[in-house]
Length: 127
Image (cartoon, rainbow, N blue to C red; front, side, top):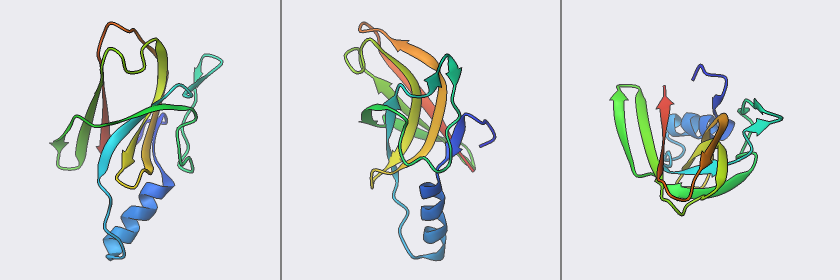
């Protein structure tokens, strides 16, 4: 991914190379993790490939759906209900696999989550 606010983690790349060799089965993406640690002093902090977790994780939820938007891109969607993360500011999101490993992290400006609305997040896994 070319955006410097998105990174495929080292753990994800380790799993991919092992799966290609047939040493392991690649765990599927099952959910999104949400956090408020993507911004410091008003500036978006770029995630690093060595991160094994969000800077400050608040919540995890299974993805609602996924779709292949191109031959090499899968788009994951996850909707937070009115009560989930109500009155929080979300500034980082990550995809996690069936083993619980964060495999992709995106940081962004703070998004306030009011308690009277749903909020849908999408994250593209691009190869």
